[in-house]
Each structure stands twice: as C-alpha cells, then as structure tokens.
Image (cartoon, rainbow over all chains, first blue to last red; front, side, top):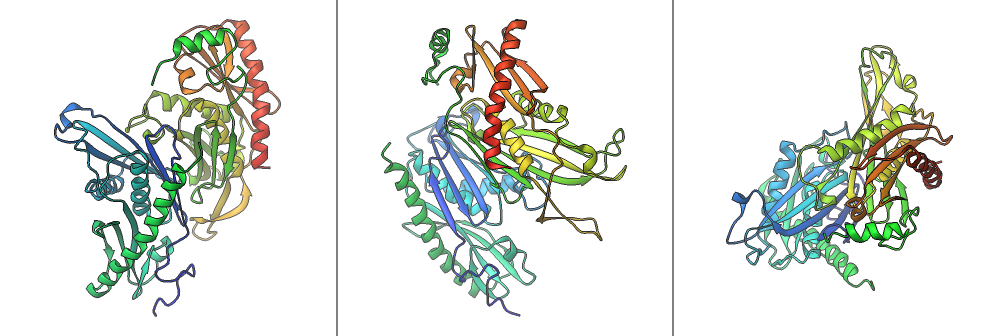
Length: 234
Length: 263
C-alpha cells in the first residue's frame, strides 16, 4: 500500500490554504496572524523593553524570549490545561533558537524582545505556523533582522514525500515521518529542524528540497502581509 | 502609557470623553463571530472597538458531584494572555483574571442559564461538564462585557460531540446538531463611575481613572443574576439604582448583537 493520493486531495508538494496578516494586535509593537489549513497562530512582539529579573540581562546585547501556548480549547481532543507544559516549553525553546540567529539586538543591551504565540485552533504544523507568524510580527515591530524566517513541515507518508502534513496524515496508519523546518530566505539555511517517525536519508534529502520550495511560498505570503499593512492609506 | 487620569476626570465632569464618545456609547465596531475554532464544541470572537476576546466551550463526560448526582457542571476560566497587553505577564492567573472568570461564571451559573439536569447522562455516574475558556487577544478595556458576550455567544453556538454508544468514548472530531440546553441568556454590562459621572465601555486609560464600577448580569426579562462592585470609592444606593438601569438598558442593546450571529 503506497500513499498515491493525499487525504485532502492536495499535490504532494502543495501547502494547505494559507493566510497571513500583519498588525492584528494593536497593543503589541508588532503582530501577525497565520492560518495554515485549520491551524491558526496569533503572534505578538513586545519590545525591545527592559528585562527583569536583572540578572538575566546581557550588557552586550538584547535577548529574545519566545512563549508558545495552545489555547485550552484548541486541541482536537479533550480540553488542554492552561499553562506551560513540557511540550510548550520545548517548542518555545526551538522557536527562540530558530529566530534568534537572524535577529540583531546588539543596539539594545540589557533589553528583551518578547515574542508571544497563542493558537485558538490546531491541526498539525503548529510550531511552523508559530515561527512564520513570529517572523512577520518581528518585522512588523521593526526589530533589526538579517533575513526573514519561513517555516513549513515536510515528511513522508507511507513512502511518499509530502509537504505541510495535516493531522490526518501525521496519524496515517503506516510509516510516517514529520519534519518541521524553518529556513532563511536569502541564504536558504536551516534554523529549525526536528523529526519524528521513520525516514531514509534519500527521502530526507528529498524532503528538505521540498521544504526549500515550500518555505519560499510561505515567504511570499509573509512579505505580502507586511506590504499590505504598510501600504494601507491610514 | 501617558496617564490622562486628570484629563479623563475633568472631561467626564462635562459629560465628555477623550475619544469623543457619549458617556453611554459603546465603541464601534462591535463585531461577533462564531466558529473561530473547529476544535472547540462552540467558539466565539468578540470585538468591541480595539478590544478582542475569544471564548471556547469544551464538553466532557465526568462523574457528577456527590451533592448533585443528577446534574452536570459548568466552569469558566479566563486567561489574560501576555500577547494581548504589555501589562500582562506569563504565569498563573492573577487576581484580575480570577475576578473576570468568577464574575462571568456567576452571571451564567446563578441565572441557571444551562439546564444542569439535562446534562446528566446517568445519575451518580456520568454527566456533561461545560468548560468555557475566555482568552484575551487585545485588551483595550472593558473585558467584563466582552468576556460575557463571548461566553454567551460560544455557549449558544456549541454543539455536543458524538459519543460512541458501545464504549461511551467521545468523538471530538464529529459534532452532532444538538445544542446545549439553554434556559436563559444572561449578559453582563459594567457601569463605571468617574468624577461623579456614569459611563459604559471604558478604554484602558479610562480603566486607570475610574472611582468605582458595577457589573450587572441580567437576562432578557431584566432579571439580575449577578453583580460585582469594584474600585476604591463607594457608591450611594441612588447611584446603584441608576447603574442598574443603564446596565439593563445596554444589555438589551448587546443582546441584539448576539442575535445577529446565533439564532
């Protein structure tokens, strides 16, 4: 049994319908909304602002702090208890690493830039939507960045390499691998790479090539979101 | 934020506000939307001016409480997300979130808005429990009214999930077309007192300048189901009467907004 047709009818390298918008949270210094299929992520950036407690301050540069949270009603099963889980803390950490490399806060010693991502509904690919949304929000906030970060998951479902897996594909009854990837736009370097499941090296390389194309599609949406905001007449 | 406490107070005395609204005008737009989360059994997004709040209803089957073996239950929780305001920090709910959740909870619980007996599946063993989570997306003031609007709209939009008749397991991915057994539809309106004047729908700046506030939850017949006084200053009986009148009147107005999106 091979995976010859995707459950939702997409082409193998086709992303789910995606939507991106900048400036959705007026209180924040920068913000964004990213929808990928039935996954929705809100991102808000606050800062650079003073960092407390003080011992966490770095006199040489500002630092980035990521926060990731699924809203209690955003899981496809039972209600999720609010507050940090081990999962949410790990995701926040990998988000931080994935974004940090492209952010230059050397002009803001002792400061912090807080990035908050919260999701009202999820259907796989939450960390990718979170990173893509965070990247728009950072640009919206005017944080100095060397490059834009775009993220998408790739993987293998029963022998077939596909992009942007849905939950039904992640749960497909066969060998499945899920590989969230984040890439820089200009240099095509990888800043997030995780994987679970099973995959051959050959298919992994194929999947990463697919991620390169997929993140480019995400990038175009991110830039459109930013242009739409800043070309508004008001 | 620049403190305009003094200005807000002086303006209020003349019946004026910083943003030019009348004292008893809500901000525009007021927008309600249901079905904003496919994973919730019912969900709603409420926008009042720049304030945006979401509510999601999750249903689960639990053992009823010992003192009410023939009834289901309800719980309301509120999260003031740091995403929604520079004033909020990560961590367990503070007193502001706790008060918001409890006042919203009382408005619905004490009105007996949900027929708790109809939530019971097997007395003493199994009943539906309704959990409403309220989250802030952008706090630009008046969370009490926004939270109450979002909670009621999400409740009205909620549908029971399918239950496997054999195993009794809930299939959250499949919803039935059966809604919650709602008996009443309470809505909360909060009236603020600033420098002797009464007003509704405060902005964040006005929330930093008020002397007292009174939240009044009422149903479509004007029956009051919960109240909460807040603020540092006292209120006279006469003022309470006036505030309740305003709250009942404004609840009618908000009710028409709910009815635009759910039956």
